[in-house]
Amino acid sequence: EVLSEDEIAAGGAWQRRTPHAVINILRAEQLEAAEGKRVTGRLYARNILTLAGKEENHPEVTFEKLASDLKQEQQMQDIK
Image 1 (cartoon, helix red, strand yellow):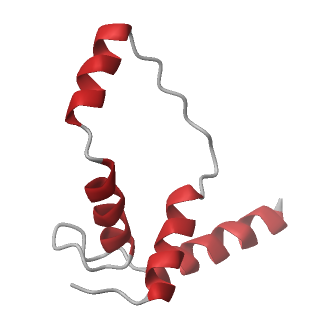
Image 2: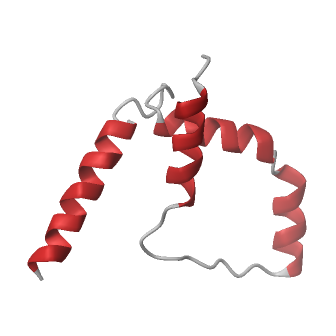
């Protein structure tokens, strides 16, 4: 499936957005195993397809759903 440049840019922006930073601490042998298995380009592309609602395993995720959830989250913050 081919995405537009806007969809790709939006997917990249959503991947970098997080309300809570997470740090994973790995032992040296765990890091070596993880580095050997990771295919960054494919992972990044799959994440963008998922965020665009184009990934068959997660069709419920879309940019519109993410934007709606973000707006709801912001409104909840305004109430506090």
